[in-house]
Amino acid sequence: MTNKAPEIISLKALCAELKIDPKEARERLRDAIRDPKKHPELAKVHKPRSPWQWLKGSAAADDARNVIVGSIEK
Image (tube, one colour):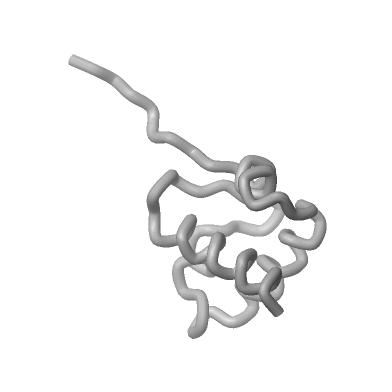
């Protein structure tokens, strides 16, 4: 019986992968969760005063990546 812990991706790792500043990424994510209709997965998963981290491959992680990447392109 294998007892594997789920893989978690942190904001720091995501920012390193995308080569952006974590401070700006946090600002974009905070703005995104204020609009739960546009980003429902992010709004559901993130709790106040908790670290920005997601299960690898989850819809919330994909949504976070899209919010951060979308902010770079603008």
